[in-house]
Image 1: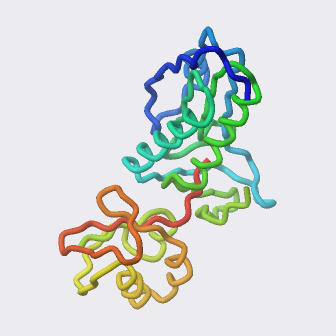
Image 2: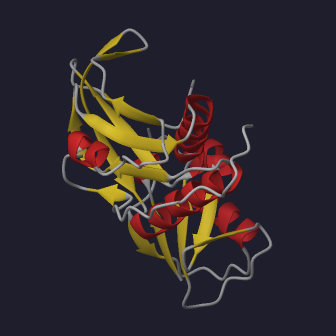
Image 3: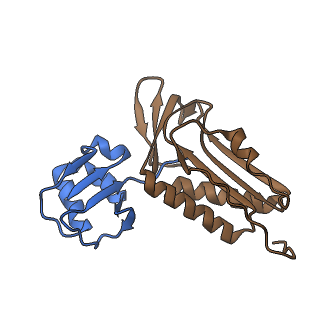
Length: 152
Length: 77
């Protein structure tokens, strides 16, 4: 890890961790620039049109909202302790999300790219596996399947 | 006590219901739910339980007026 002469200036970007409305990817990215950050990594988890050989129409996300908000906040805080992040933002959708739309977004900004990538991966991995959020896949053949057998 | 279930558990139980049976802790709540719906046994073994927005262990003592939330494995992202 590259040690800077001073601690990074972290900026709190106030973003609701759970949103029932479509995520504003460009708007969130616009908030994530910082004069000390030479690397901004944006991960957008998007709904794809197939899973395990089945055609997917759309997903529906459910969350235990208050606990999910708290947990995403604490995961982001943990990342800030592990890496010298200037900015870290995470937001997850609930409700119906169509193919091509963003279900989850994580943005990390810091001096150098290796730390921005690592912190971003850490945050999305923990959100997927720990936050009380669930997807239900609705397939083109009319069937549906709740997530929980995560193969990621 | 009140029970709230999420995601795939709604295919096995009502989303929210009152449980009249006397269960002292999370482990016995789990057994009672399996008794009510044996087909939920597999999924219940994978679930996490929460009371007042905090995860609780199997030996957590349940009070009469508690609301217990039951979470299947996360599948966000």
